[in-house]
Length: 124
Image 1 (tube, rainbow, N blue to C red):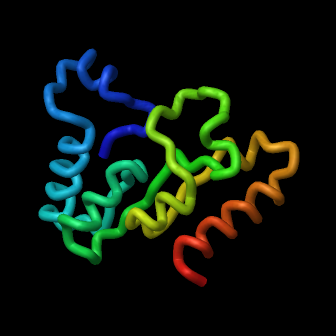
Image 2 (cartoon, rainbow, N blue to C red):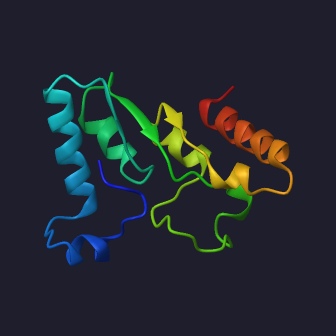
């Protein structure tokens, strides 16, 4: 829908006048209308998509960061990030995690933390 590395200022620089949330919703609705089964969407927009579009719409969410350090995390190119718990609670079906695992000193510990967040979000 819109890359998670884009913020509102990037949209303005490209001449876009609508908000990221509105553009994501427009594109997701269009994809659904054209027969797509799902979309890739930031966890920030997933709740609106889940609420307003077909509940069968598959939502895959990148830009996932572990919850334990999301507020103090070093800035990288991702501008619209959420925790795995926030993504799943907000309506995402799947999460995509890259650098938090691949760049971690202890990747297995990060995976375990993310699994715990997902289980908490799903109530399991």
